[in-house]
Length: 193
Image (cartoon, one colour):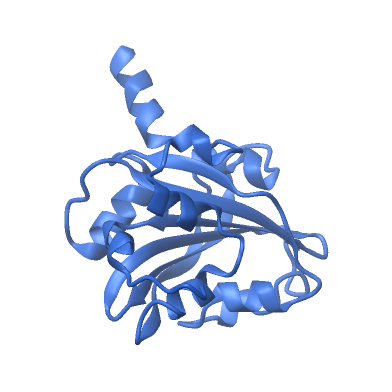
């Protein structure tokens, strides 16, 4: 029984409303708390930015996402997983979910994004309401940390810092989780970003 409780504890993240809850380094604090478009920020720090779509499908909502998108229990949702790459180095694993109750008029672009940035679309639409950022440390057994490691075909050491934000357009909710990968700290500095 104790093993099951520990396994559940590391496979679900504890989300904090303040960045101090995850005790980030100064560099990571800046990445986590900046409210500008992450896409714009990444583009400013590399020669070639690219979105690599890994999957877009119906799947079971993760346990620590249920309450965030106001679902009564674990049910199927639409999800999209991508790697954000700067000069071909993967720097962010992004995971987006949309409850199936959302209509095509709520998120008309979601199914057609392909390898385009979701962030550009969200920040460019005046009808999109953005919620507050939340922060977590994802242990290696968390589903998103495991997916990121599989996408990179490597083992990721130590917990990964992540942030998430809820968006609303019409009656539809959309939750974006960004998992910061180790390469993020190697990006060149840019005073304008």
